[in-house]
Image 1 (cartoon, helix red, strand yellow):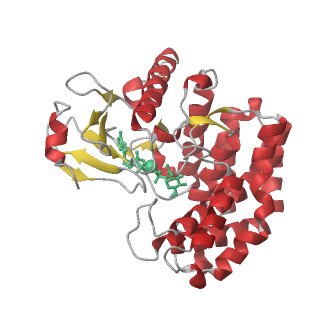
Image 2: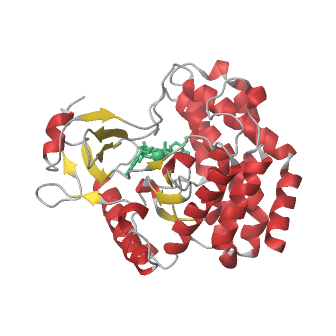
Amino acid sequence: MGYDINDIIRHFDIEFETSPYGNGHINDTYITGCKPRYILQRINSNVFKNPPEVMANIAKVCDFLREKIAAEGGDPDRETLTLIRTVDGKEYHKENEQDYFRVYKFIEDSISLDSPENTEQFYNAARAFGKFQRLLSDFPADKLHETIKNFHHTPKRFEALEEAIEKDVCGRLKDVMPEVEFARQRRDVCSLIIDGIADGSIPLRVTHNDTKLNNVMLDAATGKGLCVIDLDTVMPGSLLYDFGDALRAGANAAAEDETNLDLVKIDLDMFEAFARGFCEELADSFTQREIELLPMSAIILTFECGIRFLTDYLSGDTYFKIHRPEHNLDRARDQFKLVYDMEQKLDEMNAIIKKILEK
Ligand code: ADP
Ligand code: GN1
Ligand code: MG
């Protein structure tokens, strides 16, 4: 580590005792000690090649949301992230070429969950993610940098997998042939959303693109969705990315890295709860093609994440944080099992969407 975290915090003029925090796979997150508390993050510059552009996006999006939330009578200090500037007024501190830091106000009296404990929580998260997208529906998308190129371009993710297979830098390919076979059999589903964007049947919107349940804070007192966080990947995208990815993460009956694959399956009650919340916020703006692909998007986004984990495993675990040697492989297997289970239940998922939208 080329920095001292207690030195970094001085650049923000806040109290400087910190400890590691949260379960994110990407950034290094710390929390400060006494109230008012802050979140200090080192932006992962291996993942985000241009941290200043990430910060420019976040600053613009937060300013825009603040105004909207205030206009709707909400509390901007709790309902969107608040960036703390450095002592010299910047949105981030650059320690050296690869270490960029930022500070947010810690959102007190709120919780973030890795998995929902009940359908109401997941419904509330869906309302929050849906509202986030709705509030940003008139944000000027051309003002946003693409912080990760082709982030949800599933066919390009597939190409990256094939490249990792070809290179096999760690000699791990021999152990993952069933997973490679599973992925290759499903190559065709990769292009469904991208094709819709290309032919205009799926509009580009400003989307979050990383709608994991632990990227939304729920109010600890009411359980309602409070604040969408982790804004590094806010970019133009499809509403289906946010819908599908949230289900991937939150409607799995097991954890993302569960090794007992018998436990990994789609919980249709969770699916319904999320779909209901998301549709309540956004259904007015759905296109026909978006409606058709809502259930399928859960399969596509889960598949995409599975091939990303597998690619990272084959490449020597350079992207996602891991906590055990085969962590990325366990995650890939888990995601592929979830894809398989959703394929079996696609008709039921379609019926649920139909029922919700008929009301
Ligand atoms: P990563 O990109 O690594 O996932 P996140 O920005 O999602 O990083 O932060 C990791 C975790 O830290 C979140 O899941 C959440 O639990 C917590 N967190 C982040 N920002 C805040 C905040 N402003 N207030 C409270 N908790 C936060
Ligand atoms: C990462 O940053 P975090 O932990 O919220 C990843 C997502 C994956 C997710 C899988 C920038 O999300 O795309 O779906 O892990 N974020 C980035 O758990 O790659
Ligand atoms: Mg996160």
